[in-house]
Image (cartoon, one colour):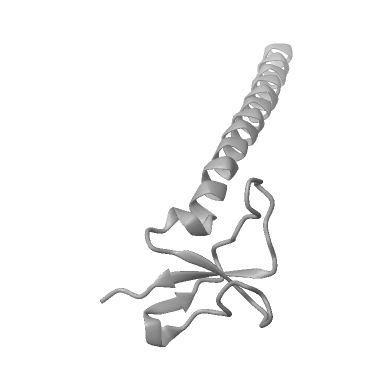
Length: 99
C-alpha cells in the first residue's frame, strides 16, 4: 500500500506540471493577442476627434494641446509616424475635452 500512495503522488505531480505548462502556454498566447489589441486602443487616432501635434515649436504642426480650443494632452496615447506603425516621440496626442 505504501508503494501505491507514492505512485499516486508522482502521478499528481506530473499532471500538475503538465497543467502548469499548458496554462503558461495559453497565457502567452492570449497575452500576445491582447498586446496587439491594446496597441490599437492606445493609438491617438482611435479617439474620435483626436489629433497629433508637435511637442516643440518651429514645426509645421500645431504646438502642444490648447485647452482653450477644447483639447487636452493624453500621455497614455501614442502618435504614429505617417504610413508606418512606429511611434513618433516628437508628437503629443491631443484629445477633445468632454462638454
